[in-house]
Image 1 (cartoon, rainbow over the protein chains, first blue to last red):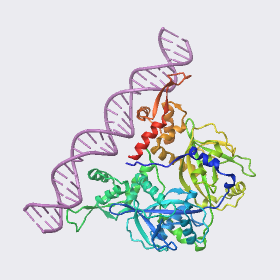
Image 2 (cartoon, protein in one colour):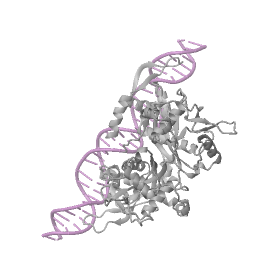
Image 3 (cartoon, rainbow over the protein chains, first blue to last red):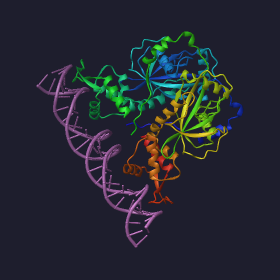
Image 4 (cartoon, helix red, strand yellow):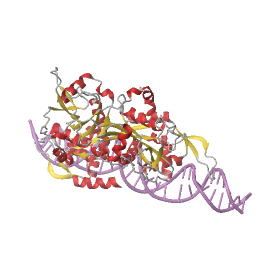
Length: 264
Length: 264
DNA sequence: ATTAGATATTGTTTCATTTACATTATGTCG
DNA sequence: CGACATAATGTAAATGAAACAATATCTAAT
């Protein structure tokens, strides 16, 4: 089911660059370290990412970026990512996973981006190494605006507005990462669904994440094989056709099955 | 075949800590950023990691650590990892892959470790965020000692000596990561083998990486299915039993097949 | 020359998983 | 009650994974 590409490099490719590095460039410096969160959600037919509005001096267009922040002295990377997400959205219970560090010096090559960040942070910025996190939540979940009170939008990952730094690359990497994540931890998809959901809804989530159609009957069989997806007695109401049955996610069962599976 | 656990967290678990953070601790600071390389190799029956000796003042025991370095201003993370590996071992052609950032403030909680690093780097160290890389090479490959001229040892990953910081945790994470990597990029295992190898050798590599026995006949079938593993006319010599056939890895064929596979 | 010893090589069956594919069921609405 | 909209469901074929043992080829010892 998964068909992914890992990123790897051969030292040889970079060897020339290393040799060309001047000794005097080999000085220790103090980069900033930040975390950025790619919060993914699914609307009816697209994978979307949550972006926060940023104010750009002298521009009345809207500008957006990933929620992110420099890390604080007392927090580790995971905590920083949780904080960022909480400050931006008010959300607390969000599945969150570190997936890659981005640290190219070229990240700060765009002067506008750097200027904006220096204004926002009141600091001289030369270079930032950022650790990217992937997070999932139900699309359109009511956000109780965190302390940042930024304006939020959901943007389809395939139709991103202009983003600063390498945020676009980060979102793309996240789009690949989520498939790997779902492969090993399928339970996370239920973060995208309400407590009661139909087979159709669950199938759509998989279709959107894997970006390909899934056969209805085969999917139904597979779903029936998931012991942690349990039937309820309720059905859809207010639809002008046969009502679909509601199912729910049994987290306890899932954790039992899954911890067993993982430990074998 | 793969049976792995991804690391993820729920923000809720950390929320209390966030709330307890004092405002005055929320100050920006300047952590150092380093890369550490976990270079894995296989001897006859164990997965081993390359460690470099480090001098600890006032101790005549031998101390080891992962090859690593603070990053330089002009290099990105990948380049830094290549440089570290090259300086430590002289190797150039090594498959290398970033796999996780480690950034807990607790990394520098051990005073001895910090003191050693401050002596070695001539800098005041408060906190280091490190980006860990996984690399593969043939065990015992002749290392033309890089500029560091450190003394190197191969240590079985299950029998590590004491290591500074969280290097032990990093090695353990690398041990899991390599299986994921091999799952999607099986070609990397040939970095562990000489140009001509027997079916037995190839099978042993997989057994060691996955840490479980593999059926001889099933493996042979699977190997025959790998078009990029091609028979040669040569056989083992100097053995007192039926000589095994030598095979070789056809990298060109592999790349063709694999890029096709990945793009579908 | 024959045999014992060592490891290499190879095929079949079973089982589980994946894929492809179309009809019947149940509700609303006019 | 007929049109229509979507829900629910089973079967057969193909593919992939796992279990399992006998024969082949070489060396060395007699």
